[in-house]
Amino acid sequence: MRAVVAKGLGGPEVLELREVPDPDIGDDEVLIKVAAAGVNRADLLQLKGQHPPPPGAPPYLGLECSGVIERLGARVDGWKVGDEVCALLGGGGYAEKVAVAASQLLPIPRGVSLRDAASLPEVACTVWSTVFMACHLSAGESVLIHGGSSGIGTFAIQMAKSIGAQVLATAGSEKKLDLCKQLGAEVAINYKDDDFVARVKEATHGEGVDVILDMVGASYFERNLEALGMDGRLFIIGFQGGASGQLSLLPILKKRLIVSAAGLRTRAPESKAQIVAEVWQNVWPAVEEGKVKPVIYRVFPLEEAAQALQLMVANQHFGKILLTP
Image 1: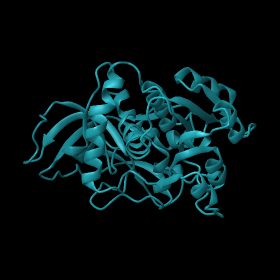
Image 2 (image 1 turned 90 degrees about the vertical axis):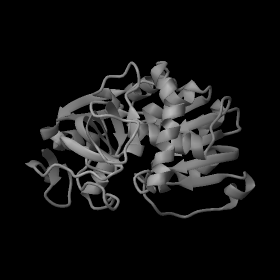
Image 3 (image 1 turned 135 degrees about the vertical axis):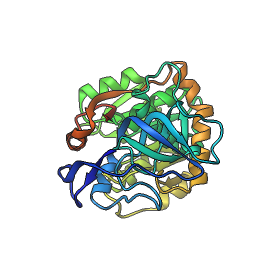
Image 4 (image 1 turned 90 degrees about the horizontal axis):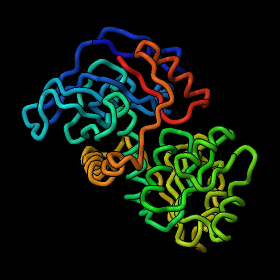
């Protein structure tokens, strides 16, 4: 099969398309013939050696894909050869075939194409496990989603809106802010020009939001605490603004705040299986009802994986970028 291989550490320029052996599968795994793969910012971190695949995962980039089951492991049931699926991967999506645990498979939601379904597993599992499983966002509460124009952000806006939450989002251009509003954000904040804390307080009558989903990290940390209301919950999923800084514990204590952080790739297989099962049960109905839709910015052929990642580096996209073999 063909796969995108990194010649060494670096940026997108180290990638090249090569012929590599087909993956072997374990008894609890399936082999997928890939129809499309999602491009994620974590792929850039892996290229730099900062986000390695978990033990036993393929060495190639790619945390999600869609495709057709080509082979089944001996202990796999509930699926058959020829089923169209999408999957949460530990790696390997940037290839023509990938092996993955059957517990990390999802059916293609009704109304979504096989190609576009590749944009869903990573963002759906990230948003559900953080905003809902951990932070328990519920109808009538408010949520601030940083990076509202990202793949995770566009999905989080729609999912939060679908359950009846008040949605606020940040983005870096007027065009992106307008698109966030079209997806369901009631308040869209330009983080380059506006004080997001002031805008949050204005929109919530001085109380602050109930939940914040953040991928910026240290440079936003103190302001995130200020923007949260009583019993607020902050979930950090990235460190684009740094991973270290000074911390005052006082607002956490005074407002009874909960601060959490976690990645998805490094979770134990059992944890991933639980998240995938909950996404199937709780998120897929919203997708099939049209309340949450894939947001695809651009699709590249597999041999142009470097260009796809360069587009992500430029941060000019809105929603998801896909690769197709």
